[in-house]
Image 1 (cartoon, helix red, strand yellow):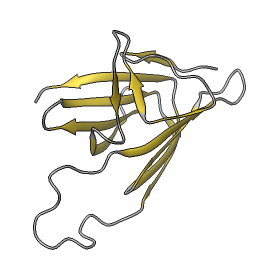
Image 2 (cartoon, rainbow, N blue to C red):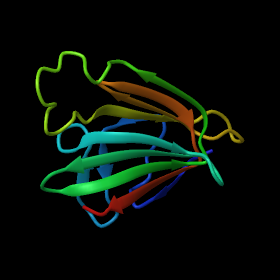
Image 3 (tube, rainbow, N blue to C red):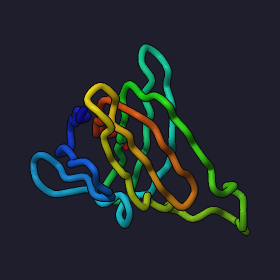
Image 4 (cartoon, rainbow, N blue to C red):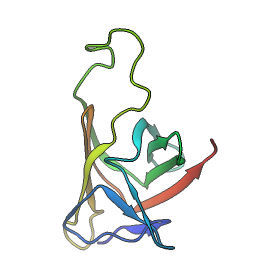
Length: 133
């Protein structure tokens, strides 16, 4: 089955995405223009995986995946690896989000790749949510 999309134009499966096309036009480039500031999993009442992105000039937003299951997370670096002094002002963005579907009754699969984390999970809904500065 297809995922439901809110605040962002729906994706076609299978596909790799690093841009979020907005319903009103324009797009958000998750690879070049926005850093991945955080990954959060909330579990009540349904599991929500939240990726928080930001850019000093363009603001912050969350890309949320609702009703998440089968989450696998791999941290590929330790945040202090190679740091000498203060960390970079802007963290890296993501390389891509892969979206694909398996069968009519199963939730779609998402794979998120970045320089520091890999996520793989199933989810029924994708929601773009602006965040306060």
